[in-house]
Image (spheres, rainbow, N blue to C red):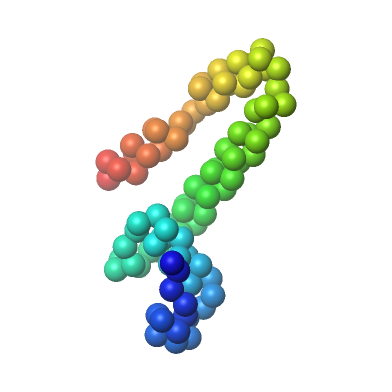
Length: 91
């Protein structure tokens, strides 16, 4: 359950409350503050996840041949999510 601004000590900007709640949902620690760049990157990840949800919602509307072509196109897309995750984990 997300913490309220009062539980976190008072005058905390609402955007910070939302960011901390997202981190808690993901199991991330509150102990290490993130840079603005890291927060922007996390927002980009959220944007990618939203795009993937939209793609999944449209899958039932495609014919089997279209699904196959989109699947191949996605599989060839570079960089892949796995490549980005590997780069982040290795540093």
